[in-house]
Image (cartoon, rainbow, N blue to C red; front, side, top):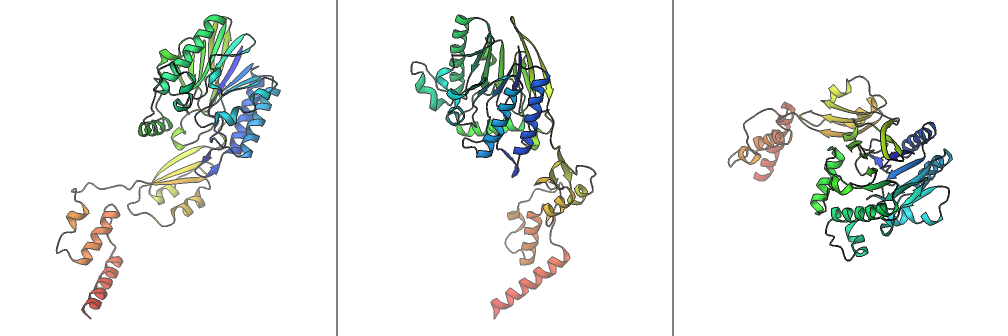
Amino acid sequence: MRILHTSDWHIGRTFHGNSTLESLRGVLDALVRQVSEHDVDVVVVAGDVFDSSMPAADCYDVLTGALRGIRDAGAKVVVTSGNHDSAARLGFQAPLLEGGVHILTDANQVGTPVTIDGVHFYGIPYLELALVRHLWPDEELRTQQQVMAHAMRLINADRAERGGVSVAIAHCFAAGVEATPQLEREVRQDLRQGTLDVVPLADLAGPDYVALGHIHGRSELRPHIRYSGAPLHYSFGEADKPRGSWLVELSPDGFESATWLDLPIPRGHAILTGTLDEVLAMEGHDDDWVCAILTDRVPPKDPMQKLRARYPFCATIEYRPEREETEARTYRDRVGRGTPDPQIVDDFLDHVRAGEGASEEERALIATVVSEVRAGEQA
């Protein structure tokens, strides 16, 4: 059997305020062509199908088109829900679906597989602790990692009875995954919320292949335990990560191999660093999404307007002014009692402009304003 392992479609996500729906639709069309070209039997989508628990109508159009394309290409589909999905909304039509599309979102069914051509597919929807703890009241479940371990025990108990080749599909942080900006951001969020759980690889032992989702970069944790990553770049921090999916070969004896299949990248991503003038003078990137990191000591006027005139797809600006090594003095240190008013204003400008004080023209204006204020006070 040939499986195409994909995940984290995030249908409906925007990129710095720009819709990604049409780009994703094109990439999923390419994935459908790969299904046909490589005689794929089953496509596995390991969670985060949608980016929101309440996706807009056009998001369902993208999903429907992809699922219909995969089915028409001759493959079946097994989908699980991720932390961005609403399991209820994603799975409400599951009992009515025909034609080999299986949407597994019911935590009660974790230990019951979908069997396709003799291979058992165990879907583990994202297991939110507060929402699933009541399903297993006899278990001590205080963390999501403990919930995942329990789910795998249910799967392995069922495997022991059924025998045969099996695939587990899960959406989680697994130990040993390569750090990415997306992972670091979500880890910080989980730390703030007190919900960080990393699943040890030992807890994922048993199935012949484990298809993981949740991380936006591909990763091989074991030959048979892998993340496929997202099909699009959803942040500039992911720009160096390839986009694609794993083509997995299973034999009657279990896992045989996994080959990476690249997906097209609709638009490149470029991070350009320098002063505004330096960035505007850089060559290329006319068709790329651009993140401009500006090092001007004084924020320039109308930078986005100028950048978009040069780079039509400039998406965001960050300011990282270059600072000279000077004696560490706070604004309060510099503005002590008895400091002349014009000097106070000049020191303030020097402070907020990272060392760039008032210009001669500004100093003259400041002196005029201070003089007029004093004259008014004495009148």
